Image 1 (spheres, helix red, strand yellow):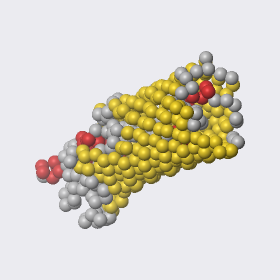
Image 2 (cartoon, helix red, strand yellow):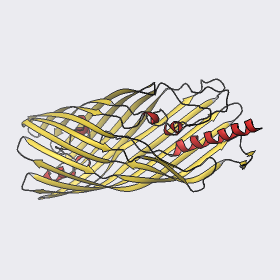
Image 3 (tube, helix red, strand yellow):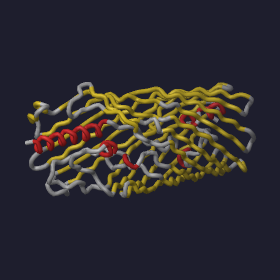
Image 4 (cartoon, helix red, strand yellow):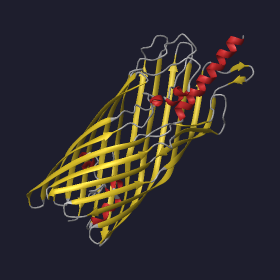
Length: 439
């Protein structure tokens, strides 16, 4: 009897970990940015910031605009993530590492400890739109960005004794922006902006066997304000420099969490009858502070060379979940996620040539070094396959009078070994954009 009771207590612990891992999404991974032209230059755009995407990269760049204009872009992302260890299906006792890795399942014995699905494809289409108007030394802009979004699923029907196991995740962050920039002494500019961030995340898992069905679901949505400030100096006709700062915030994600298991309810002393549970829940999505400095050099009027450094402070990230109706399964938690401060490096280039009056073509190349932020204990295909990546970019555009359509492509790849397990990620991004500006 004692052994049976201890086993069942272990089952409760498993269920707690499975549910909490599905709701306590601690943070996110930085997106590539917005704007086809900027992305084609590897994102090295802080010291340039001279098209419609300036409010995202450096709002001070708006101060040098003339007239009015509008621009839009759509970034289509396809990402493949590989976890050589697949999805965990552990026996009790469950460790904190299982929570950090987002392990969504458990077992009581007789099942494999890992499933067979090792990779997934994550896809997203991220649109952005900005309009601006300049008056002498002042410029105002308003727009919406989609800097981060994802949708992915895993399904495994190949494991003996398990009819099907599936896991799904979706999420996005949308920024509604207003910015104001001012130019003085013809060479200096300052810009400030406010982003109203709207974030949504959802996760679900299901495991069906001949004897039971387990389900857990969670969702959350929240909003927060973010401040942006940028400086830009055009020191000479050949050199410009820029710096930006984006403020951090913690977005409280309000939603619901549900766990059901066809083996419940059970009467287990001393808990009494244990049943399925559902509760409102608040989790935290941390949006980090970022610091960026950029340098641009124009050796000739047709050639632009740029480089950026970006620091992102993920260290305050926590894994938090607060349930309105906590129970045996839905238990509150709060611990340091141990994410790192990361240093991105970017370089870019653009070459333009005019082939007719008011007709101009351009080609672009870029590169980004994007290091990982997530600790070894949290890397997983059901949480985040975060690896350091080399990102290679290219693009082209054609200016036809007031109009300039553009296209860009990025390829990124990286790998990592954490706790003896190999992880890989390969990204492909296709970006298309269109800008209209008065000449």
